[in-house]
Length: 358
Image 1: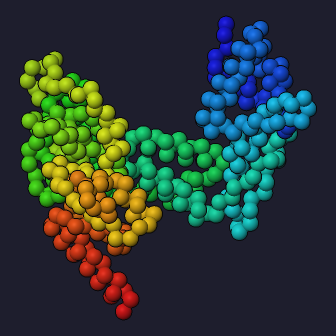
Image 2: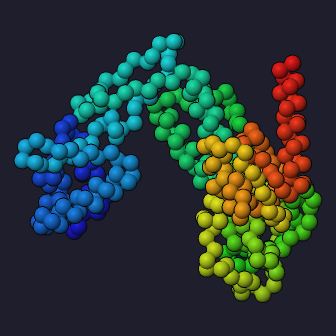
Image 3: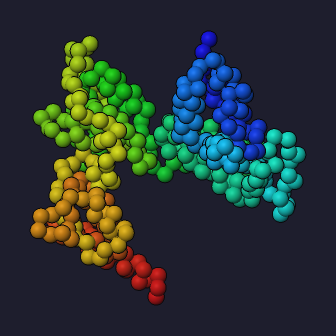
């Protein structure tokens, strides 16, 4: 039977890690069973190159080294580039004693020593990640902490059963359930929604296109009936969600083939997230710099004004705060409501710093 690729990879890694010096493909052929199955040299070379490239894509730093003899090529994987460092906790102001090392190159690995407060910060960060509301991120954080706990006393750094409180309200699990079912069956959904911009609550009926997690919040991408624009609704502001009970087993709508949730979510900026109508905002670049030029690339050019950019904004407050971070290098020109909001924020900020400096 043909050896599974994962077994071939493990054998290749073991052969490379057992050597401190570069090894040729001929040597690897003798040590990796799957490479000695009688295939031609060209087929063997193609298999090895695929394995090497795929492992490199996973972050395994396999080096290609020119050998002086016969213009040969060798391959090398250093232990320090593959294994994680040893972890230890500072004990009474002194580094922990180094552990006894094996005979397969582990002496090349460094030791990473944590101060007690640094280890406590790691534990707090893991707890904070678990509380953000993203189940995938929480699973990754839990996995990382379990791996660290093999070497480090993470539990000892946390008093009792203390947990970090979430900074923002999480979404209702029932909302997740209803929206998930509506997405699966392509049914319209109705819910009460507290608008991000005005805090006014109203009943909405939309066609769900997908759920995505961005900037520590879950959002629903959905389109209302008789509207062409796909808007974003923050799940923590949704209540009383109900799936359309009419005509069970039939679809209420279809998601356009051109819609890609990943692209839709990645393209969103904070000022674009919301359920209100988008307004056009024009900003002016007063001074050229790295940050301001990067900001300019997010907007569209304005004909006849090379120093201006146009943005579509749903959350004026968020956009004004973003502009304020450029310290005068990027300022709003229109609409007047945005200019007034930006000016008010600037004056309030100056007042705070003026009081602090007095």
